[in-house]
Length: 229
Image (cartoon, rainbow, N blue to C red; front, top):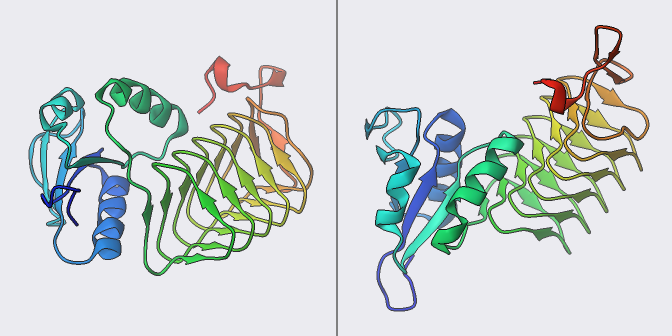
């Protein structure tokens, strides 16, 4: 892939842990060939990755040195609050964010995917689905007809949204979590692994179990702004 001047495109992958490498692998499969992938991570030492996908250049403050017209950012982070922080940190660079869809994902008609989004291998997004910027739809997730995912939403592997579900900004659904038809998950809520939301759930809380109920701590519901993970 090249830019308008014909120069090869450089992809700056933000993050270098396992999820970031999965996103990079999906990008390589989507583009074909051997695109240039440079990784940046504040917590992982520079050097080549064991996956062979590329090398870690350094921490995020090194990204600016590679902010050229032929560069695109690739979001390799899944945690919603960390996504929000990193996106804000890199916004002054003015670089475009790539939307990554693995070739084995199924995307139906009239689906919108926002900039910086990721749809992983085996995911199914059916019809009339709207996914905002920096959404993560991980491996083997399902988003049925007319689902709406706001910015920064993360669906971990195997999460399933039935028809007409709405997921608020920054909400996070754990592995194999399920939301039944027409329910709304509020902004910055966390639905734990394997939990099933039978009805709409307010934002800012962590829910677990079947049916999903708020986690309680010291006699009251735990809220994300009170330290819930």
